[in-house]
Image (tube, rainbow, N blue to C red; front, side, top):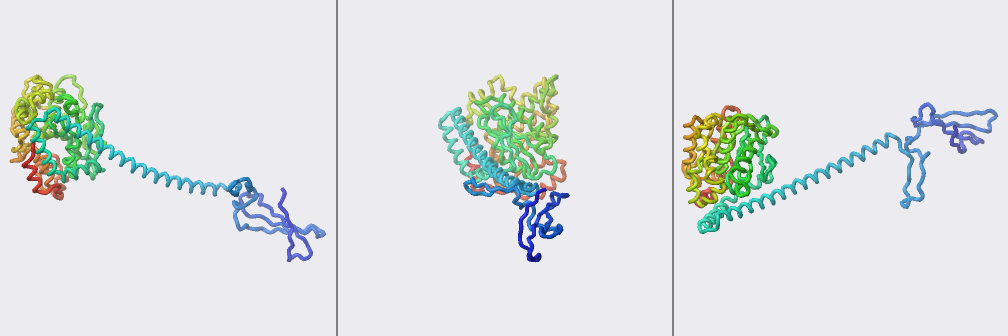
Length: 476
């Protein structure tokens, strides 16, 4: 092996020139030490001595294989191949830097993407609501009666706007809401899920069908109910459905049934208990949900009918301010401005009134077996309701009990159509309807009842004087 050599004078060896040889350890190429060989050629006999030397720098700093790139315009030094450990350290640092940069980039991208989705969602929903409002005016006509009702509605909305703003902000930006979950392939086959913050174990579930005179129903109308029930560890699924003229009553019932099916079959994935599902509807939504129940009971009682959900999964039905016998309501609606021609178009003509009147259907002897399959029916109604008289709930309750069904009517003295659903929840504090709902749902659950007893009072959203004025000017 050739050794690098050079000669230097050594003061300790007078009158001689000593040649120094550096020899690498052949037994261990990775050993950074070398051996210094001193030899004096002037000696008569070859004399030499060996001296081990530890370098000040490791071998990775060696320039044995380094070259200089003189052609590089930046005059950068190009070093030889680094040792494997140094190379790996630099790779780890580079990977760490890349990972950190990637993480920051991903978080920034996700934040921007989430905000963009929220903005697009707000814009699309605002457009939808505006279109529904204009569509309603188109079908109802613009006569003197509807001009006065529209003005009353504007005043009503302005008085409640402090509450609407807070509820709207919660709806669009709360992390506890899963908005617009697809449950079917038809237009507006979407639902919103309101999830409790506490996720310790399966929660009871309320599948809610909103009202809107079969024309302006929308899933966001249940936002206040969903927010308040979820604070009591109850999951709420607000089901959207096609409205008239996008669909007629049979389409609405089909959509509601499909939404119920989705809840029954998928709610466990969101922390819900598939064996503790309650069906609820308000106003037109109460009618649609009741129709879906009766229709499904008839299917289950028949032979060979396949169904995607079972009535046994529904613990109870809660009907709020609903109408269940269309024959008794058609004239009332006509006098209130929902004219007969429009109403019959929604209900698919005179010949379909029986089919979509749950009170009439349960009295049909051909379907007597279906009544026993229905869950307990609890019908809530305010006695001051002018949109749908409270007699509608009382009559349906009595009819159900008369044919062997389980039913109960719960009346709230002096409450209007919107008092029980909007003004009272916005008032905060004690709310009879809310307390009754929670009591029914948590019945038999001692731990939940104990939490309800110590729950803080609900927050007021609107000043009292504005709520009283809204009660007076409400067009509903």
